Length: 130
Image (tube, one colour):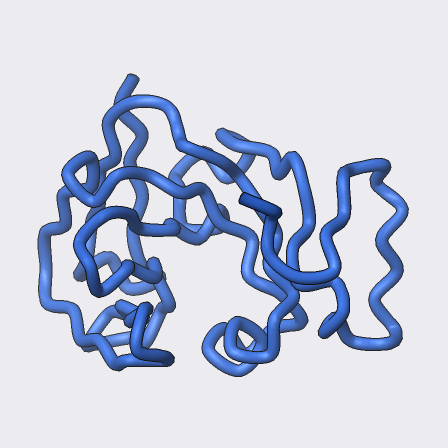
């Protein structure tokens, strides 16, 4: 299966092939600041499954993760692990914005107080236990 998406202005297009490794909503403080939103809803894929066309920029949000965005409009597209293993693509950038539904919430210990999670999905105070 191939899913496509892109930024607000259309300068960047992306494709992912295959099924995601997981689909999660992250409430950590880094994701809140990086996304300018209460959380980051994303589908995680092997980096090898992600193809990007167009000019992007990136910045490190931690030693393990860098955030990638459109250089023209600033749309936050995905976060990729610096070790080259995986990339979490923002659910809202897919052309079919309902292509993937989250199955769990992570870093709930850092969620904003006014965010109410009542969707019945699993919740983890930090990351998913290994």
